[in-house]
Length: 296
Image 1 (cartoon, rainbow, N blue to C red):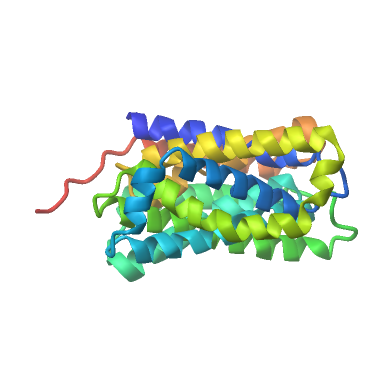
Image 2: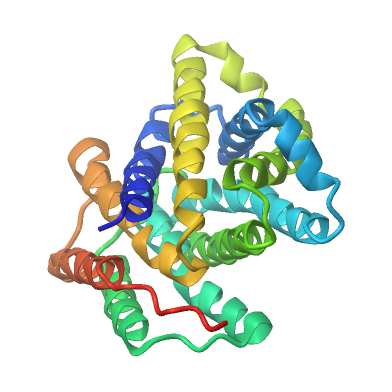
């Protein structure tokens, strides 16, 4: 496997810890506040470490529309993602959010780029999606839901998060192929997205300041799964298609599910364990595939 694939695997491992880490926040902290804090702080850091190049990227007319489209996905994703985990559980929230990403990415590539997907990619995605479905069957509702009726809303928010994730992944790729360095593209996109999220954080984030553990967890989420992971994510996007990227990052729900079971105490049935294996098989198929030669 090349370095881009390894970078995405490392990013996925970091992302997989988000739900478990967030579950240790005090009950007064809402999932909206957690999502806003994570992306607002992390996005500001990404922009800060690449300010000159990110500013130039925003000044390029051919890249700016895609940066703004991607920034919209950056705003929606954390709010929907953390709310999904709160209502449906860490395992199901991760599985639905990340598992639906390849489907939305494929639709974007087909509708905008008119790029056909390879048989190998379809086999990998089909295998992983079956695994996602089986994994979702074995899950249970999250601590933030008072009744099973909240789980469908959590699943719907997970689908919204998956669409937002695919959108900013696709938009990032479009910016990078226009000659913008991956670091500049990620810094500009997440920097713009951080501004409205900062406003959400001001309105909802006061409970984070009530306990030292909340601040510590928020700091970890911003620096690890957000800042460092998205640096690695941008590296992977330099040489891989967005549809391939979203399949490899299906490792995140695998890690998240294992941590949810071992640490948070969520339960997983036999279908869920089979789903974990199928996701790993799908990721292996797509990550070991060679990229097709580019046409002149």
